[in-house]
Image (cartoon, rainbow, N blue to C red):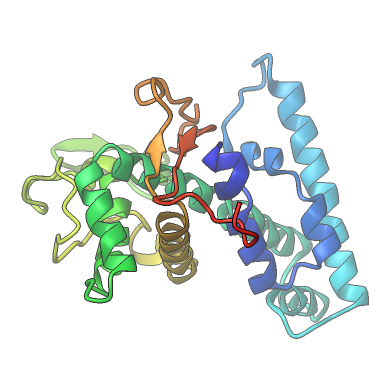
Length: 287
């Protein structure tokens, strides 16, 4: 089965829809392809018309969401945003931007992080088996899953880079002068493998502690959905490892995975896996 299409592409959005108050009919109509609007496409790029089509479709969808919440408000985040707009606290542009961030940033990174976590565990089978045993055995370590998620976030994050950081004034930065208006991009993946902060950084160590990774950013840019993402990742791994015994990559797919081609995101578009029950299911009629 494909772990992306069969699970990772759907689970985070279903959780997100429930958390922010997105009605079921609107949740069904959301097209995951719209998330690609975060991938930069230049004005002369051949893909520009398709990019603009995604953007227009997403803008139309966001208007449907806000109009629906205006007609049928509830005790949820989306209704609160629409009420704040109607009270004059938020502009239309601000409201639409926040809804966009919730829908896109609240889903695709978790989808990608589930895939990078699975790939890392499957390529480190002894760690995968140790984690699985901690979840199914009575004397298993109940805290290993929490530590494992933090290490998987550090080891291979769904975000390799930050968005652009622009300098308000001329700044001396590590011996270089950066003019006002210029920008830098921080490599989160490099920071998370910094040997000055992480001993043996290229090793997947589920017991790593402390683990001050930057997978969720830092400071005013720290991801506001970090707590939800952690719960989703713990739930996803617990479910997959306990329900699908002997989980493994399909033969021949380990080095040929279709990684996402994007500036900021890291994940796979398809993850072919197989599993085999330890014992064949028994028919209740004895066959």
